[in-house]
Amino acid sequence: MRPYEAGLAAPQHETRRANERLVLAVGHIVEAEREVPFLCECMDPFCTEPVPMTLQEYESVHAHPRRFALVPGHATVAGEQIVGEDSRFQITEKPE
Image 1 (spheres, rainbow, N blue to C red):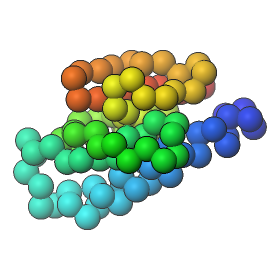
Image 2: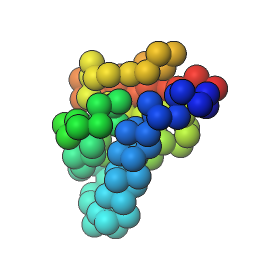
Image 3: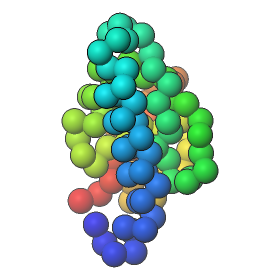
């Protein structure tokens, strides 16, 4: 990551850490097909919109360390690409 991008990406990484804590807290009690309201991992540090995903969908997105789950249409960083989407969320990927 380029130095100027490190500060820009901080909100996404902080939100990802919060979402990972949510997985640890509820992962053992939530049914596989049930959606969990994860936090949007967009660039807006004040965004609190939920991204409804199953635990399997969340883990699939984050199996790739440069991918993030966002509410459709939320802010991305220059160079970040949408690599997947449905009506509930978009998956973005940061460049190497």
